[in-house]
Length: 130
Image (cartoon, rainbow, N blue to C red; front, top):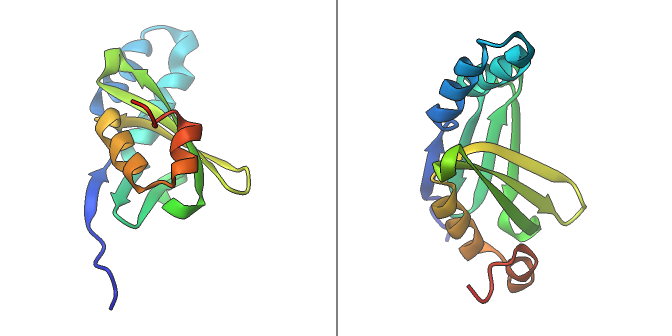
């Protein structure tokens, strides 16, 4: 019997990332950061379920990456926007890393992902003993 995939979060990056990026456009030196935040707002999408993490992004949203929880060995978060959103770096068993930028409610998403990880991955992520 197949387990039904239940969606925990589905959506794009936090709107605050776009707002700050647009405010930075007032200085010429920050225009690349502004372009990055616009591209993320247009084409970056996250889907976090009870079975996997899916990130769709790249130019015009043509790249898709699926991660299953058993492949994750470590998750590290960095708060942004006064803690309203944050970035996550997910390290996989083969040593590759995937960065999730401007994740809304990143603390809740991090807790949800950690609940799905092995004890070894939780320890590496610093989640045990909270």
